[in-house]
Image 1: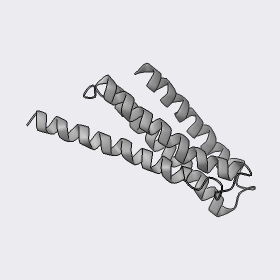
Image 2: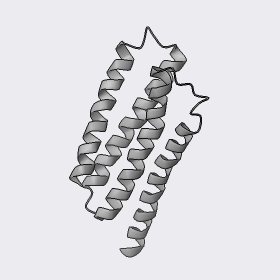
Image 3: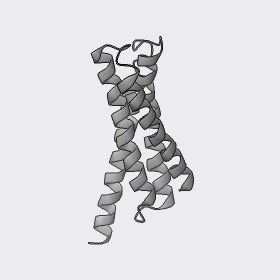
Length: 127
């Protein structure tokens, strides 16, 4: 759990740094469409950092469930947000890594689906 929280804190730190970088340094460099894409990556990263804080401090999840959900979200953030950062900040083109962003989105979705399944099982157990 503490490893997950440490990784989450680092991801939160980077979301803040990248958000500030985007708001200030990239305004003159990126087009409005590119900046919007960059901001989407930052926003999704921060949303999932907040959820990761909940997941790893919620006593209703087992350690295995916390780890599984966390790893899905860690991988999802890396692939989804990371690929967008890569596209916007480097010469890597979206065409060359077209599959990475949606794969990251799918991984994030799987994390949410897993939480839904766990919560439904909890509801059935305590009904």
